[in-house]
Length: 310
Image (tube, rainbow, N blue to C red):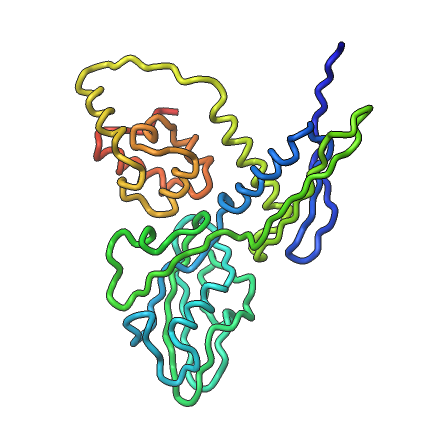
């Protein structure tokens, strides 16, 4: 009996409206609908980079539980409104945005002064209402990252007095669901059709989110093809150094949060594992640029390690 391998179709657009998109992939081998759908859903939710506010400094406000005279909202409510602003950050370096307002007015996201590397996709987002002679001066730090990161992770070092650290939800995805139906391929009726719905916050198109998630999956799978060969120890001192480095976790290298998140997402868990990577390989990861390579090299040097040569 001759066996033929049937390959799935490329994604097909069912509908694209506003921030939502529905896509279908046909002719998946029986059972592959749920295998692919669940994998893509998890990648879309956790591995697409985005930008978010990580620190805020308000003139005259010592902490998030304070109030500001003449402002209808509490500082906590202002911060929650600020976290609803959808940012696009061009580049890997953190950027600072600022806002100054005085007198009776409604403050919205379009009132921010932005550097050229920052865009706001929902400029009408309400921030706060001022009345009378009230005034506010605010600075916020925008960073790039993956998924959700607690403020304790973002601020390993102590922040300046008067600076409020925030939890950051970097993901640009609001919702993603999938469903699987059976379909006919030749004489068989048990092949799968995968239908996936993606809703974003406007900083990325649904189609782009699906494409990036597929590329991420392929990149991860390519990395695990083949088996590692055991490398002989060159000297006893180097072997001891490697052993010590193997115990040093990525989180202990004191790298910037976005770099740590990108390395851990790529399953690089220790300094020794990081030293087995080349700079060009690391640059393929989201959130890793030339500056990040310099920071990684400096951190490894503290343990007598270097990145593998290209």
